[in-house]
Amino acid sequence: MRSLKLLPLVMLLASSALAQGPTYGIGTTPTAEDIRAWDISISPSGEELPPGSGTVEEGALVYRRTGCAGCHGAAGIDGRAPRLVKRDAEPGTDPWNLGRILPIRAPYATVVWDYINRGMPLNREGTLTADQVYALTAYLLNLNDVIPDDAVMDAQSLPQVEMPNRDAWAALPDWKPGMPRLPGYPH
Amino acid sequence: MGATRPDRRGFLKGSAALAGGLTLGATEPAFGQLPNPETYVKGTDELIAYGERSGFVTSVRVPHPPGSQASPDAFGKVFHVAAPLQDSVGMITPSSLHFIGTTRGSFVPEIDPREHRLMIHGLVDRPLTFTMQDLRRLPSVTRPHFIECAGNRSRSSHKTVQETHGMTSCAEWTGVLLSTLLKEAGVKDAGKWIVAEGVEEVKGASSIPMEKAMDDCLVAYGMNGEAVRPQNGFPLRLLVPGFEGIFNSKYLRRVKVVDRYYMTYNDYGHLNREPDRAALGYQIGPKSVITFPSAGQQLPGRGFYEISGLAWSGGGAVGKVEVSTDGGRRWMDAEIQGTAHRMAHTRFRYQWNWDGQETELLSRCTDEIGQVQPTRAQVAEFFNRPGVPGQDNSIQPWRIASDGSVHNAIS
Image 1 (spheres, chains in turn blue, brown):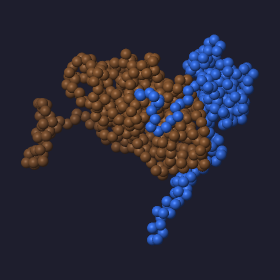
Image 2: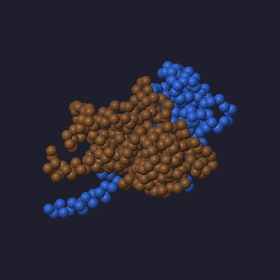
Image 3: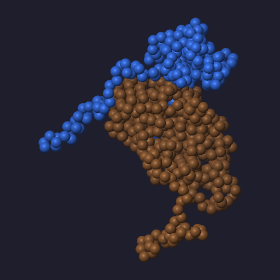
Image 4: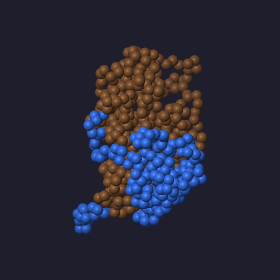
C-alpha cells in the first residue's frame, strides 16, 4: 500500500528526469543500413549523394538507351512528357522567362539529380544506377548551357554547379502557429 | 383494424397530415397501409458486409480540370479528380467522394499494412521505425480537417461548383500527432525542417517547417471512422492542416529531420521569385462557396430556399460567414452549423426568399485570425495587377436567372 501511495510522486519524478528521453518506448531502432537504403533525400549541398560519376556524353547515351526519348522526345523538347530544354532566348535572358523546365529553373543541380533518381523513368522508377543518374543530370544541364561539354558530375562537382536561379527565388514565410498567409495582406 | 389501439391512431393522424394533398390510387390498399415499393434490393453477403448507397444516388467525382486527361487513363493511371460539392450536406466528404490529387498521374499503390513502416531519422537523438501496430498503440487524436489542392481555382468556363471548387474535401482523420513521434525520436536543436515522403512510385516529398510539424501535423491511419482509403494514402498519410494539398504526403514512409529547406521536387513546384506569390501558395486563405444553389442547378420557382455552403481557412477555424443575395450590396450573417473546427470545412446556412428576379448569390468567410475572403477586384487592387496570385480564395458569385437556372458569374 505504501508503495502505491508514492506512485504518483515517482511517476512525476521519472517523467521530469526523462524529459529528453522517449516517453512510450514504442518503435524499433533502424540500422545505419536500413536508413541508407531508404534515405533518398538530397540536400542542396548534396551530402547524401552516393559515389559514382557521369559525363555529358555518357548521359546522351543513357538518354537514348533507357527510353527517356520515348516520352521527352529525341531532343528533350518535343515529347508528350514535360520539356527538358530551355526555349531559345538571347543570352542573359531572365531564367524565369525560359519556361518551367527543371534543369534550368531549379535553383540547385541536386534537385535535378534527386528527381531523376526518385521518379524516372516512368513505371521503372528506381532502376537507374547512380552513374546513370549523374550522366543524365550532366547531359540535361549541358543541353541547357549550364555546364560545359567536358563536365563530369559526381558527389563533389554536382553541388558546385551554379544554376541561374540559385538565388533568384523567394523563400517561404517563416511559419509560426496562428500567422496570416501573407503578413500585411488582409485576405 | 388497429383503430382500437390509441398509439396507432396517433400515428395515423400524423401520417395523414404528412401526406398532405396526396390521393390514393384506384387500387386502394387497406386503410393505413403505405403502398409498397415496386422493387427491392435483395440482401447479399457483400451488402451485409459493406453497405452501398442507393442506386438512385448518382453523385460522382469527375476528372479535374474539366477537359483534362481522363482518370483513369488508358493504362489505369489516376490524375486529379474533383469531389461533387453540389450534392454535399454537412461538413464531411464521404471517403469514396474525397477529391484525389497526385504528384503526377499514378497507379494507386497496393500496400500491405503488415509490411508498411514509418521511419523517423535525420537530426534526431534516436532514429525510430514504427509498424502500423506500433502506431496503433500510441496516443491518438481524431480531428476533422480539409485538404485543398492549390489548383482549386474557379474559372469563368467552369459550369458547376464541382468544377470551380471540387478540389477540396474534408474528412475526420484519426492518427498520432507527428509531434508525439518526433518527441519520441528526440529532435536535435539543429532540426528546423522535416522532409515527409511517401512510398508511391514517385516518392513525393515536401519540406515542412519544424514549427508546423510540432504544432498540429497528424500521421493518420483513420479516415471517417475506417482505414484511410487507398486513393487517399492507405495505410498512412500525413495531414498538414491548412497547408496546400501537396504537403499532405500520402503513403507516408519516411520523415527526415533536416536543418534547412531541402528543395525537394515538390518544393521546386512551389518555386516563385516573388515573396508574396510564394506565401500565397503555402497556407490556404479564408474561403467559402455556396453549394446550394450553385451553377448547373435549377430553382423550381420563387419562394423559400435554404442557401447552404462550405467555408474553411488554413488560418484556423472559420469565425464568420456572410451571405449576400443581391450581388454584394448587402451582407448578412449566415448561421454556422455546430462548432467551427480548425482547418475544417464548416457548413453555413442562410434562409432566403427568392422573389423570382435575376440576382447574384455570394458568400464571404472571415477566419478566427481576422483574414477576410476577398473579391477578385479586391485582390487585383491590392497587388495592382489583374488576377489572383497563389491559392485562389476569391469570392464565388452565382447568378440566379429569372427562369431559376443558376450560373457561374465570374467574368
